[in-house]
Structure formats: C-alpha cells, structure tokens
Image 1: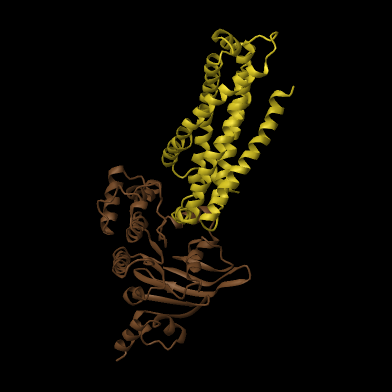
Image 2: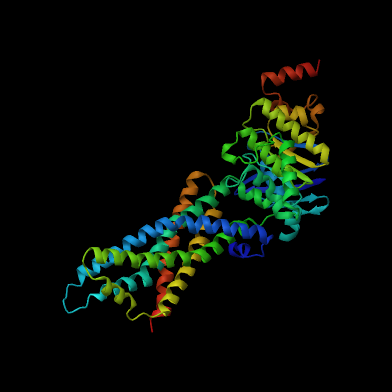
Length: 236
Length: 252
C-alpha cells in the first residue's frame, strides 16, 4: 500500500526533482568519506590476508591482485559496503521520517493535500538507485588501490604482479552482476527504512526503535537478496 | 461553512467522540473547547481526515469530505491551512522555504511572486526579516507565528488551529489570538480553533462548541458563556480565581 502511494504520479515534478538532487547529496555524497576509508583499508586487508594465506611458492604472486579484485568486485563493494550504508543511510532515513511523523510534519504535508509518502520516500529511492552504483564503483576502485598500496608496501608482491593479477581472467559480466545487486540493495535500504520511519508512532524512543528495525531488516534482506541474485547470476 | 453531523469515533473499546454535530461559520472564529482528553483534538483530526470516522459526516461547503475519493480529498485539503500544536514546521527548511512550500507545490507563480507572498505572510505575523532562520532557531511563539504564516500562504478557505497558544506566555498568546481573528475576518476564512485557553474563549469566541466526555455539551458564543447555567461548562471556564472574578464583574 505504502509503495503504491510512493510511486503514484508526482504532484509537481520540479519539486520532486529538487528533492532528488538534495537526496543524492544527503544520501550519496555525504557517504563518500566512510565508503572511501572502509574500501581502502579493506582492500589492503584482503591483499595482506591473501598474501599470508598463499605461502605456497608454486602459486604465482599475481594471484594476490586477482584475489583482491574478485573479492572486492564480487562481494566486498556491492554487499559489505551496502551493509554499511544500510547502517548509515538506513538509520538516517528511518529517524528523519520517524521524527517527522511524531512532530506532525507528515500530518502537515497530508493536510496541505500533498502525497506525503510520495514526496518523502520517492526521491530517496530514486536518489539511492542513481548514486549507489557510483559509490560502489568508487569503492571498487579504492579497494583495489588500497590492496595495491598495501601489497607493494608490505613487500607481498611487485607492482607488475599486482596489476597483472587484477587484469587476469577478467569477466565484465561480473560487473553487471555486482551493479544489479547494488541497485536492488539501494531499493531495499531506502524502502525498508522509509517504511519503518513512516509508520513510527509514539515518541523519541519509538523513533530509535524504528531506526534499529530499519537497519536490522535492511541488513537481513540485503543478505537474502544477495544470495538469491548470486544463485541467479553465478550458479550455472 | 463546515458542518459536522453525528460524528462518532472509538479507539479500542473507548468511545472518544459521541454523536457530535455542529456548524462552523465563515468569517467567525469557531472554538472547540473542553478539558484535556475530552476529544476535541480528535474531532479536529476527524474533520481533516487524519483519523477515519466511525460514522457521521463532515461537510466542507456541502461536500462530504470522508466520502470523497483520495484525489478529491486532496483537492479539498489544498484549501485548508492548519496550525499544529507544535508548529510542525519542516526542520530541514528555512522559514522562507517553509512558508513558500505550499506555493511551490500548488501554484505556478514566479519566484519573485512567491517571495513577495512569503514576505507578506511573514510581515503579517510579525516575522519580517527572519526568512533565513531555521525552525530550531525560533522561539515557541515565533514557531506558532511561522506556522500560521505557512497556513495562510496559499489563501486557505478553511483554517484549523490546534491549541494555537499552548505553552506561550499570555502576551504572545494574545498576539496569536488577535492574528487568527484578524486573518479570519479579513479573508472570510472558516476558522476552527481547538483550545482550552480561557483568554482565547473570552477574546475571540464567536461561535463555541463545548465538548464534555466526547459529547456536544453546550454551544453558544463568548457573551453567552457569562450567563450559562450549564454546570460542566461553568466549572470548566470559571475554574480559576481570576475567571471567577471576571464572572462576578460581568454579572453585576
């Protein structure tokens, strides 16, 4: 029911357009620092762990670059970063909309004759679907870069070996799989969080509870849909 | 004019509103008064559709609002301005953006025309020059006035006010009351005010509905209150020493 109201024809496109731009900044651009930091460190950690695990002299060292790329593109950036975004963005959305509910701001929108669900939730969903793939692309690049920097500086492999590794056996379809996951996760995070925020009743305590529920349910659904999509795309 | 006919509302096993009927007239300050928890805010929310009626009807100039489809209800709501108890200003927007919001949504005015209207409304509620402030930077009285400016920005035909002067000092409360009264008369608005503030009753009560335990207990105007024989109304209005002395002076 809520989603039917969300995707009802916008009452004024120009206002919705401004909201989408605002949300792209609010949801996406503001998440860039945390995504960047986590990606660089995780890329480094993945490479060092791979180097530690691959102690067999028969295995070529370019495997480090290959492993980092595969881990980052297939799982770390699309899933783990989206789980982190579920915490940051999801709680933010649920608490923002929840606070608007308990302070009667949503009632004020309704009484003005505005479709409050559409006005508040639609721009967030669209903004996340637009901006999350860019965030994840940046995460992939920084993760692989972090692996490169850590791999070289720890003496685990040479620059040539790492770069050769990240180019080896590259299948562009894996990017298609990863970005499909990201779009689905963007929808899950924003819609689930908005749902819990929109249906908040009571006071500040309930806003906190809605925020927690939003993160928990989004995270579980991300993992569930991650599994389903992996089966669809990769289980030949 | 707005008319409510035999409206009823139950929450769980508690009937909050019992068969209430009343007419709210244009260009008058119509007050719904009663003790806390008597059901007056519920009546207001039933009228604007924030709660669903169990039975009865709410007629906005003859249109039965609860029976309209969602799109038609939205059309009626575009003619409604509402002042919420807490103001309900949008936290993420400045005062100017808050007041401009209904104009952005429902008019095709140019930016200059919208800003002129915003400045007029802000000036009308004595908040001129405060355009750039956020709700968090406003005092309680300023928030109420800002919410009133937003409520009148799109020239509403109906104005609903939920406890417009609760939590305000007496002087600011009178300013808000006077503003509502002036705006109502100037623009021929049907104004409905939910209040338990006795100053408001005495100052601006053109047409009063007294609710007691969810029922229509008494109707009249501010002059008639001083001659009431209704025990519950008397106990409610003249509960304090000050109001008792006002009563004595009025009935000398």
